[in-house]
Image (cartoon, rainbow, N blue to C red):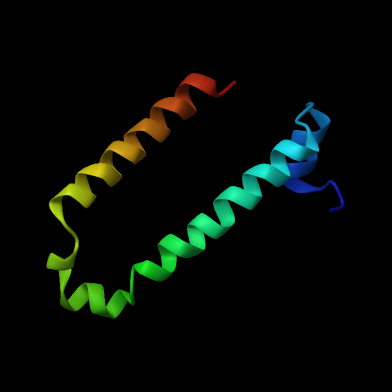
Amino acid sequence: MEGIGDCGVMLQTGTPLWVMWGFGLVTVPAGFWLWHRLGSFQDWWRHPERVSEQSAWFMLLSVATLVVLLVCFSA
């Protein structure tokens, strides 16, 4: 709102405001939806078998993709 922090730098370097609002409108609800579907940490700790092998591989692939994108697009 005040143009400070990372958002301020993004605005100074030419990122359109609508892109930042659009990103937030998509990712914040998606993040809450994913977060609330996880259950409690204590429940996961007691029953780690609830995490499927497919989910674990998907998360590994997602993190690896993000790292590659970070390296490719960092200045």
